[in-house]
Structure formats: structure tokens, C-alpha cells
Length: 217
Image (tube, rainbow, N blue to C red; front, side, top):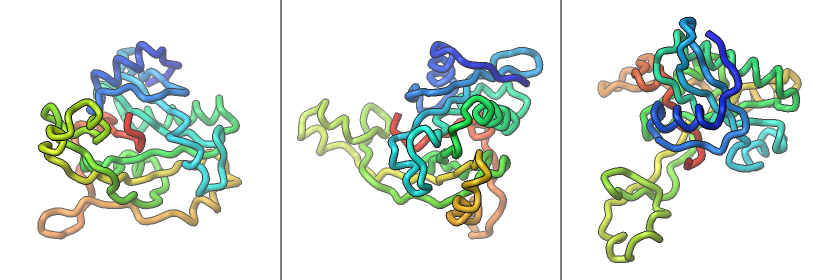
């Protein structure tokens, strides 16, 4: 398996075809993933995050952290976790100012961050549900679409609270690890209907890297 710098065209195609969100993130660094047969498997993308506030809890400023914004892979890769591990090594090698990686597992998609747990990310908790989604054109979307329709029509649509996210961190610089570990919490696990805790079973989509970042993109 190998990774190389991805073009915007490659990133766009992988996001629109391999990721459930069907949206292209604001990108800073992206890598194309190739398997051992030299088949292109999609892209892994990192961005600057939703804002400088993402690094504030850890005393980091913009440029010292990156957000893993997409793992848009088609499932032909030998190992999703290995692809992620290689991308992290490349970030560390080529971006010495970056100290921390941030990523999110989407509760709405019933993602527990299995791949983050498998690659030793640090779980720091879950954000609460906030904001509102509306059922529009046969899918749940952000309520910002209210500006596109009449008030009466908007009021007639089904609504629900947005789901929160499970947040994970990956330390690239040893000098901040002790500080980051203060935020560490036990990994979340899936709970069956009978309330017995079991290891989270990885779905095909999750194993293929279908994770959604914090930002609405």
C-alpha cells in the first residue's frame, strides 16, 4: 500500500462517490491511497478545522492542529487502519508545526470511532446534540435551507435535533501528550438491545472509512 499527494479532482471524485455525505471538504492536505495492486482506492483528507477554537482547549493555535475531514475510500484497500497510519506518518514528516490531529465519529451514522480506537487515538468525549435538522427532499438536512422555501412550507416539514459527535485526538508531538492525556476517557462501545456491552461490530461502510467530520460540509 502507498499514499501520494492527491489532486483536487481525485479528492472530489472520492468524496462524491465513496463517502455518504457526498460533499467535498475544505481541504489543506489530501492523499490518494493505492493498494498493493496499484489500484486507486480513494482519498484521505485533512483540513484546518472549523476554526481556531478547535485548538483552544489544548492551548494550540491555527497551524498547530489539523482535522481529519474525510476518509473517502472504496473498500479496495488492504487495510483502512494502515492507510490512516501511513497518512499520519506523512503529516508528521511533512508538517513539523502540526502537533495534534482531531477527528469525529458521527453519532447519526452510529459510528463509534472503531478505526480511531484501532489506531490508538485518544477519545475525549462526546458533544451534545445541538441545532435542528429538517426532512427536505427525502433526506435530513441543516435547517439553513429554510431561506430557500416559504415559511409555511418550512413549518410543515419534519424536524429533529442534530446528533452530536464523538471526538478523538492523535498526538504528533511528545511535548503535549501529557497535557492531552488529561482529557482522555474510556473508548465508547456499542450497546446491544439487551443492554450487554460488546465490542462494536464494524460495518462495511465504517471499515471502508466512511467517517464524517465535525463540520457541516
